[in-house]
Length: 255
Ligand code: 0L1
Ligand code: MG
Image (cartoon, rainbow, N blue to C red; front, side):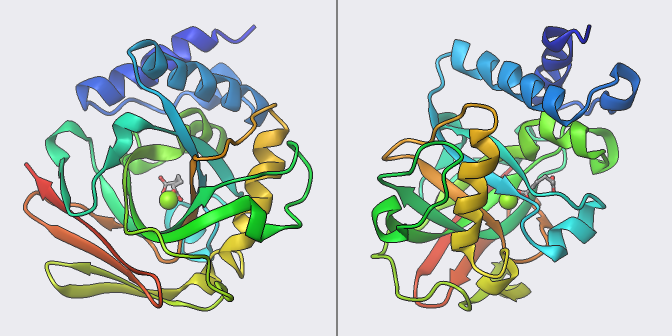
């Protein structure tokens, strides 16, 4: 029987100390279902420390991201209020192990179907849309992991910033996306890279999280996934995501 608590403790300690840990899934015989159970335990430790669940994130929803980490399945993780940074705010990179930044599209959720049901009415499901930057930080050494490893590690979730919420535009499927560091464009892409259309990420999120009985709530934030590969986040950097028609989201990296 897998010791879920011990595995969650190992990942929680890595996150809290900023010291990377070896991969754990192969040695402990952790499959995808067990990995999501470890993730729940891991995030449970945050909730026990007073954090609140405020949303979900999708991971590896683009080819660029899959190729970057060598894992080719869509995954999902949990967001807590402690991960949120105000737009234009500061994130302390010294608290992380090897953080990276990636440009995303965020949804402010409204009325969602039952877990596992398809999202047929996007206009009712999503109240607003915004550009976002996600900071990911694998707790594993060298940022390398298997599929169950990264799921157990809450899909590398570390921090996120969301720009000003906008009314849901007619089309979301081919908006230009830039990631800038210190005013220089370091990644370019399109929202089409997110499963062809970021709206599909929501359908996938409802379906995949629903398998584990997780129900998204009105008012939650949903990160649909990155439109480009992620870039290392260095102290002193000013990072900005620009999404055509939606605006910008930015943060500063303090040591
Ligand atoms: O948000 C993401 O796409 C990250 C998922 C986990 C893989 C990674 O750490 O890049
Ligand atoms: Mg992401």
